[in-house]
Every structure is written in C-alpha cells, then in structure tokens.
Length: 512
Image 1 (cartoon, helix red, strand yellow):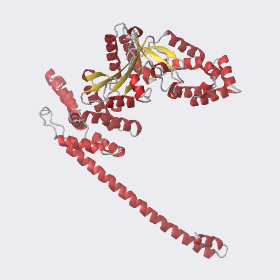
Image 2: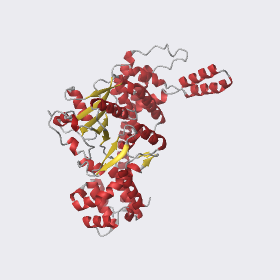
Image 3: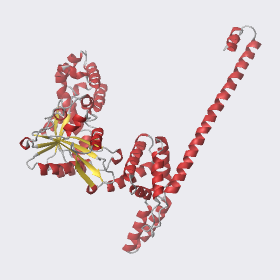
Image 4: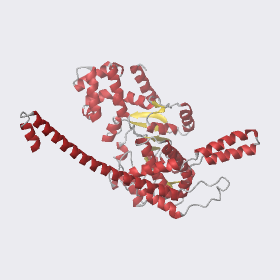
C-alpha cells in the first residue's frame, strides 16, 4: 500500500517514473496472483485426488459384492455370495455421506444394471422364433425377461435376507427418492428406484403385514416412535399420547416381520357419536384417562390422522389397506357402528389460494371471485380504497394469519374461502385426478367428498395450511368399491350436495 501511495503522490513528476511504478505494480500483482492461483490449483488437485481415490474404493467394493448375472440355464443353482460381502456392502454404504452415496448409487445403477446388448440380442431371437411352436416362443420370452433383469437386483435380493437388510433397502430407496427429486434426473437412478419399488411392493404386500393395536401397555419404545412419526397433529407430551391410545380412542399400525418394532403406517381413530367437524374436540378435549367407554355413545369411527413412517415405502400401498382392516376391526368390536369418516387436513390449500388470488388480480377479474357485498366488506375491514388494494391486503393477511383477528373479516371471508376450498378439492386436477394428495388418497379408497368444516383446525399449522378448514371424507361401505373404480378408471369424484353446491357457487362467480 505504501508503494502505491508513493506512486500516486509522484504521478505528476515524470511520465517515465509513472510508467515504472505501474509496471512494478503489475509485476507484483501478477506474481501474487500466480502464487494464489498455484495455491488454489494445488488445493483443487488434492481434492480431485481424494475424489478419485473415493471412486476407486467404491468401484472396488462393487466389483467384490455385485456378482455376475448367472447364465439362464444355471440361474436356479447359482450359489449366493458370502454373507460377509453383503454385510461389508451395508456397512460401507452406511458410512458414506450423502454426496458419496449419490456417486456410489450412480456407479451401481449405471455399471451394474441391464446388459442392453444382451437384451437386444434376446429380443431379436424372440422375433425370429415367431414362426416356431408355442413352447419355443414361450421359452424365448422367458429368456428375454431374464435378460432384462438388472445385475444389481440379485444383490438387493441377497441384502433382503441379511439381518436388518429389508430396513436397509427401505432407507436406501429413501436416498434414491431424494436424489431423483432434488439433485439429478438420472435415468439409471430412476430405473434403480423402479426396481426397488417393485421388490418392496412384493415384500410389503398386505398378506405379509401384521395389524397391531397400540395401547398404553405397548412397549415404551414403540409409543415413542408413534409420537415421533405423528405428522398430522403433533403429539405434545406423554400425557397427550396416553390420551390418544386411551378411552374412546384407537391407534393401529402395520408392522412387518423383517422390521420388528418399527411401525410402517399409523392410523389414529376417535370413537364418537356423530361425525366430528373440528379437530379441537378430538386432540384437545378428552374424557378422563381412567374412563370406561360407554358403548351406547359410540356409533362413529373418525380417522383423524394417518401417517406413513418410512419415506422409502413411498408409492407402496399401505394406508388404504390399513383403513380397510381397521374398519373390519371396528365392525367386529362395535357391531352397531354405522358411520365411518375421516376428519382430514387440506395441505396446500393456502399456497394454492395465494397463487389463485394473484392470478385473478393480475388479470383484473377480482369481481369474479368476490361478490359486490363481499368485496365491500373486505375493503372496509382492511381499510383498502379499491378492490385490487383489498385483495393485496387480503393476501398479506392470509399469509400471516392475522385475518382471524378481525371478526368482520372472518365473517366476510367464510363463504369466499369455503367455495374456493370446495373448488380446490373438487376441480383442481393433476392428470385428471385430485390435485390435493389427501383427497386423492381417500377418493382412491372409494370415500365420498362429504363435508367442508369452517374453523375446524385453529392451530397455527391448520391456519397456515388451509385457513383452518378441514374436510370429512365419508366411507359408505356399500359404495366404496364402486366409487373407487369410478375415480381410478373414469376420474369421477363422488361428492355430497354441500360440496357440489359450493362448487356451483364458485363456477357461477368465476364464470367457469
């Protein structure tokens, strides 16, 4: 810095001296940059060397543990790999960080997948056999099917037989799902995910699952997991979980012999006289813990929370089977029970609503969403001078939840939000099916979109997710099969008069 100051101070003396100063500064800068660059390059070189070393270790592990695909003729007689290889693979993978796991799974899925050249050759042979007898054609088809087996599938099968192997594969698929959704769109990883999902769907078929009722006498570790896994209405403390498995409540889970002590999907049920229209009456208001159930007061089963506990089992049908099994349990325990319904959250409604309001504001169609009276009420409650400003203020209040502090605004917004929510559940689609994932789940099960409930969940989460609205999906047992097929095959949603009336109001206002 001193040299620079001196150079600046004497810059007016001579042009030659100035040039010498500038040249000296440039020489110093270039030398410093060269030194820094050398240091950076040296660090990069070390990092690259470490990465290459990790890659060599990964490749060596896979060469040792992924056995070649046996010949078609000897596929049934091929000996399994040593147990030590399988345990080494599991131990090795568990000790990788997430970045290393991604690299490892990329190599596994890319280098040890299907032999595409061999599969193409088998496909050509199948075409050539079409003029032959049926037995020859069937054998050629079987050979082609076998050639399409990824090499790593045998490794996965062997892992499943090791102690803790099934749980390991469930967790491994969880990693694959995270990578394919957030990091990479690798076709090799997508194929690995498809293979894992197929295997897990077989291993976790409903006939292999055990229904277990959770009570206060269940192991402490299991109760703790039930509390931790509760994703819909968080458990506050031990007294809270004790109440949720106590009188007028039931808690069930599916378990699997290969994952002992690990609930796979958990269903909470409230035993009531009528179909509940708010969650506060279920999770906050309880009878005494030592109360004796009065059977005469129980005619309805309310499914108020269902949580999948294993991310790696995403897409494997468990929850729908659990509800059906629990219905049978309820009918057996309470033969006079006549009503089965969910009391479900509506995740995503508020975020959808924000985008919907923004779109209508941008297009200048605010009057199509709110009636003249409703718009006036919102303007006066928010202090806005115009409809556009009122909608902007409303969006801000919805984002913060502060709209509930104004009784006038709350009263004015009830009909607006109820019909918008009805449309969100009934009319907003993805590939022809309900956009809302909870709605899609219950509609696939054959439930009826039965009733929307205002101020049904006044918790901060309920307000943030769905403006406090909840919905009952009602299970009319004689109709669930018909409804489920109509939804899955023809994308038809069975809805009650209340819901359809709200949908009609929305369509009339918005000119849909």
